[in-house]
Image (cartoon, rainbow, N blue to C red; front, side):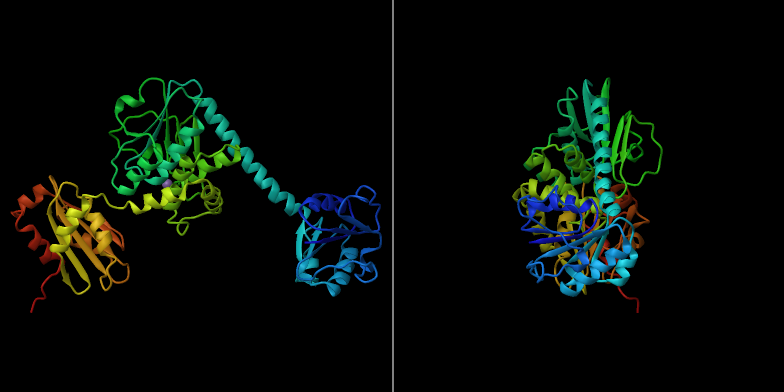
Length: 459
Ligand SMILES: [Mn+2]
């Protein structure tokens, strides 16, 4: 691409210098003294008033479908004259005008040219600088705080999800060498099998939380949650919090980074890496990538510019085959046995599918099976139930078109136990003690459920 720069002002030689290495030939059209760039390789200076320039007379050959013209001037009237003359010889959509004032006049007169101001160019650049300064100083502050601490505990509230795991893993790497020891712990349970696969494949050192872990000189950082999200039974003194959820309470912490306009905490941690020029190892990058991917549903929900930018960075870093394996690890192997029962016990009426699995150890298997069955054509609603030691679990799924399963679940089961959810997903948990109270034996559960889910029409 060749570039012709025309006009007046100090910016002309700066533009020529700046664009020189990245492009083809550069023509500079100006009456000014251009001795500072004259003779430079690839730069041709043409000393004429810009509005008098013509391609033929000045023996310049630009390709109207490939090359570009930049016009810059600090005097409005003269600028207009130059743009007018050039846009009669060259496609205006390939002309960039850079002025020193917000010049709406140029745009009004020449709607097809691209107009930028020095101000806006600097502003965008400074925005990036400011962000970089802000993120770097946060990381420095956090590193200072953990320096020489006996232990840093990065804690995940409740059931670990990919964003929490990814950001905890990333953060542990960033403070490595500052704190003497770092641990990552979670207070809930692993429910989704993909999250277990993530931990195994990326080798994330995460352990179940116990009270003794946060004692003494331990510096506690909560990621992807806030101190008030924790169960009252967990009594921890928090020192720091990094999270992307809206902040509802004031905390008195040593360090707080509660970001707005972030779809994932993993995005915030990735920015710590990027703006401090730290290399991202591929397994750390994989964790952060999968964290953003799941929290934003592949950048389709609750997604901001920040997430998209960091996603692009991570896509180049992460091992995408690992991510693929994690995403495919939806069900544990022993769920297949339960699947067999589910298929055998399937009952269909209209667009509703129901299956009772009998007594199983892990009620979460209902979720795998319901998620699978809802993908069957001509089915709009799925209910999968199973009995475990202390409760009867019912999982509802719908395609979101006809049935609101949250309402359905609530209507059917709220009088017996916990029941609720939303349009496409819902869950009920009925304590075994309630079944005793209703005098329902384990043999009768299936027909009791069926009668409720498919009520017979009264004649
Ligand atoms: Mn999150």
